[in-house]
Length: 73
Image 1: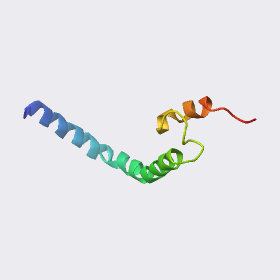
Image 2: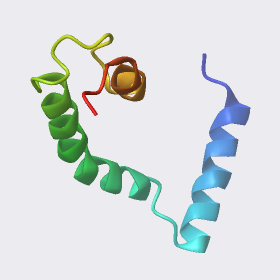
Image 3: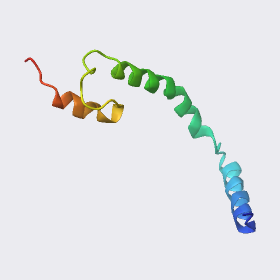
């Protein structure tokens, strides 16, 4: 599983990162900052009374669940 071409390619990529001043894990920091917000939003929507009997339970089905419920107005 040790491919010498892959190791050489990784060295070239790291050389480009250091030459251009790019941090390879720089994109993960913003994701970790936003993660508690998304988890809290998902939990709030999952346990809200209005959504208790709505079809679907995930955040990906939220618009479908809202549109499938009947509105009193």
